[in-house]
Amino acid sequence: MSNKGRSTPRVVCCAIPIARSQGKVLVITSRKRPEHWVLPKGGWEPTDGVLEAAASREALEEAGVRGKITRFVTTIPSASSTYHFYELDVVDLDKDWLESKERRREWVDYAEAVKRVSWKAELAQGLSLSSLAPTR
Image (cartoon, rainbow, N blue to C red; front, side):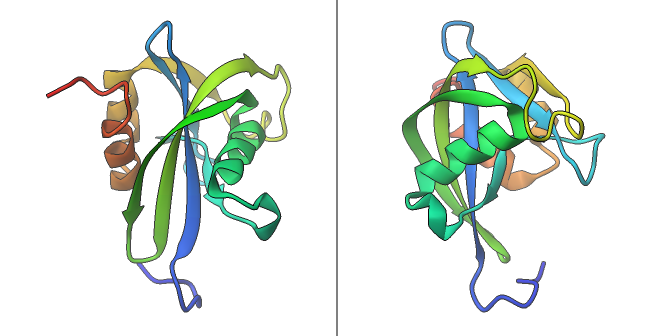
């Protein structure tokens, strides 16, 4: 995969929205590939300041998630992007949100979440390092 004209990889911030008491993860459909599921993620913008703010913003825009970033999970470099993963403890879900006409969202357990995002190796790897992952 290329850098699409960039001299450095894109900085991508990813939220892992968690309903901790139920042990569930919120997954959303991809806009480009509506048959595929993803975690809320997107590019860091200078107005975000810190990476955690970008993960939180993406969760709100893409999934209508309101909550608190509680844990840095990992950074995963790829050829075109560097992914930064954060756990987000969900406090509330907006009924209507910015991308609600373009995406579906669904609460699933950890095993199902990994299965759904496994088409995108970085997402599955980030999720596998979250606190919901079974201890080895």
